[in-house]
Image (tube, rainbow, N blue to C red; front, side):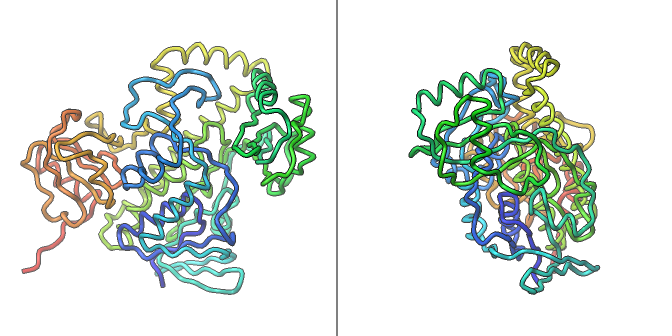
Length: 478
């Protein structure tokens, strides 16, 4: 028996596997595809995901392979400037193909000792008080203490659990793919720019070597979006919107997506949990999908590891759905709002003009980008200091930067008083006595995911919070 089976080897599953391995949890990742995908669905990392990679010492791997963007247009294609004074040390979006993100996370998880099995498709699942049993298509049976379904919007795990997936069905559909084109690049770019004046769900961008990434509205909503569109279908839609098919040919891959929004009724059924698209789907507008899944994994990893390792407080694992399901619901609403604003209908266009005027206000623009990039999230930890429940940005300390001290995935007490102690929890929480000119608080207790669990300078108050997040104090041996 292994500790945790992760079903799905995409960014969410790989991030989760790595987080579990940081705490010594034995983990097996089951991916039904025979090899990592070559399909580039996600195009970048938002601010909070960039911070996540920095907290685990991974950002230096990502930066050389991506491109930093500080331009407007991330919310509903409204062409506003990148806002000033974002509450982060990483005020940019990192353009990087999902295939590269998956490769880097695969390397990270493997280095930490995660076992990744490709070509392993789950077809059966059952659980009891002691663990979870699964069956694969080839008849192989495996058993683990816990299982997490990170297997996408059509999640087999979710369906086998019988978890409801209510929401709104697709009303519009979009075709997407990568292919070559014979059109003159300048003429192509000019045509695309003209079409996008009225149709924001249209785009053709160069990837190099004569290959283009293409996005174009479909003629309608297909009954089976799992089936890829044909090249002729793509050409027909290009001609409809642009008056030309740009001579596209030799597609690398073709796919389609809708604007459905669905949210799982439950994120946890006893020893089985859901994360990423298995728990929520939404339109890709704003590029939140991959980021939301990675952040689900970052929230869940240390909590599930604490449960496996035997020190988790009673309610810790349940705090995962309590915290992340409302975040997903908010993302679904934000994505649906953006799709509405991108419609060519008169009503949505009127709202779009109003939103364009409002986002000329710096505070409105910053509010929307902080919401879109997930740095505005505040979990409900009760009343208290303004930092409570928020993630703490990377700040400069006398001994270096804060995120540089968080690579091991442990809790951290940043103590500017030098009078506090984490005795009894030193195996789970690092005590850093240092001074930070950017931090207007005597001390902060950070969870392993970087969220502020306590602010203050009173030892007795601290002792009241440590067990809530890090379990009972370790007993001394005589």
